[in-house]
Image (cartoon, rainbow, N blue to C red):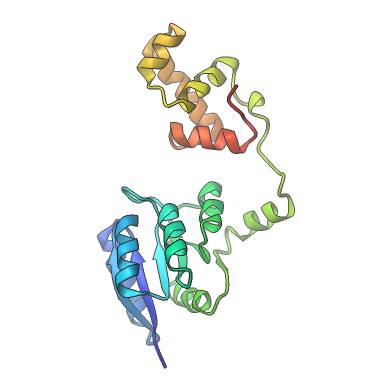
Length: 215
């Protein structure tokens, strides 16, 4: 029986090597290569033609979502399983829209992970049990969005968000709005907290997906 060829893409060496060691114990799986970022992942897929790629989301340079999209474009037969510590809604749905065959959390049992690889190779879609309800909810309510942005942000915070969407720095925003730079930083911290965002780019993305439009 031919083995399923697996590539592992993760920026942390210990995690990559640990996954490789665990999966090598499965007699029907073969680890054909490892990569530490999205660009290296694309080159690895081109060189080794794996059947299934285990892909982290957050990596330096090209992230896992962008890499998944490009791999699926160049190598449509390759199956990508996102394997990450993050169960963030945006990561989940962006990964699936990019063409991932599955989304699993890193604490998955090794036997479960091996079974997921086999299932993905067979053409099935794989979701971690803890995130399946989110996907079902989105499928049943495709128009469901967060509360209106106006209910979350003050007028000043919305004004600063507009500048963030233009890529303005804190110094530039402070000069435009005649505010102290420390005050701008405080407003941005409030924006991130209210939108559940990791950084300013994520805040703009989340706001846009929640119905906000720059005016």
